Length: 436
Ligand code: 5CA
Image 1 (cartoon, protein in one colour):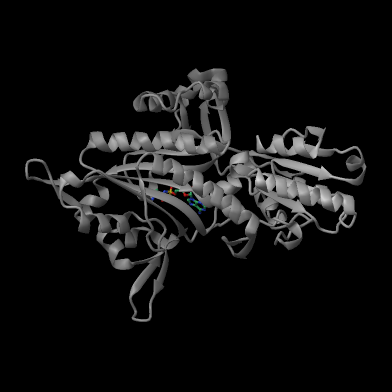
Image 2 (tube, helix red, strand yellow):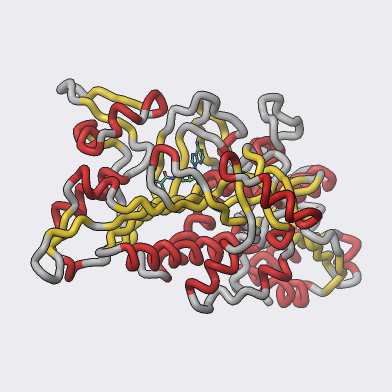
């Protein structure tokens, strides 16, 4: 991509409405713009990151055999009357009336919608289990939308739903999602701590929140120090026995809000960490809560009626964009983990118009593309200082700087955004380094 032909409206000044670093950096890096409170447009750079995150989530869901589908954003109120949640959900639900005076709503979640689809299609235990997900926009009319995309009103969620015959099968499904979540967040460079949680308006009696630590997190959490020690985490083989992996995490203390236990915390002593966290995912087992009220019943092995066991599994895809920035930035800007970076490398032409620089940049640009490196070339006619600042701000993992002085000696500079380390290498070696 050539920056001269791209849409990247970066800001020098810090926008005054942004209270936390990820919101500031997303606005400054030209990733998002606010449309109204808690509702954002995703500009090309931000959109790329969101798509990368979405793809990781998708791959890990597909890997455990959950099938992708797509349900609508607008749902009929009657569906929610069947579960009883139309009245109980409260003012967070955006209620709409269509031209025929029918009550509709913008979905805050999809338990009812998926249960209806399942109920009408699946009649026998032989067709179980069914595990489905979609990645779709949600709307919750939050009292206090804030912190940019972290607590939006409109936000993108991956929500998966499971239908199993009995508790044992439902528990296995829950465990599979649990481990898939650990893998998903790890691939994004995040250490997510699973903690027992309240299930709130979704309901149910088994539930874990996946929380990443950040000083600006909305909730206070308490956990065993081991959760912050990546060595311990790295030593757990996520491909191992499902229940053993889940136990390795759930055996250690991690809790938030009412679930915190002062007695346990006392015994932990120096091993206790109290910090602030951001909830990036939440999984629920709620058994027959919706299947009973909505009649999701199949014929069992002995011809009897079996009300199916359900769970739901959410990941805040758009929230993660902000969450990753909270976890990975410095004073100069964002530091993208390779796996979600909008481009792998930035190529800076220090002197556009200088034929040697232009030629070397064009050649390098082409070679990087040929080597499969997603590259953003800053070919704008701007000051070097401004180019460096923008490149640090948008946080691509690698920067390649091409200037007239270096070219005389046949070299370019390669900078690692995360470590700040710089190396002078030939253009050929730069390609090798970035492609490798
Ligand atoms: N139906 C269930 C799971 S599929 C559900 O809705 N769960 S949830 O309410 O916990 O939301 C799932 C995830 O969406 C949360 O963990 C969080 O990461 C994200 N999320 C929730 N509310 C917001 C919001 N207002 N802004 C951004 N992300 C949000």
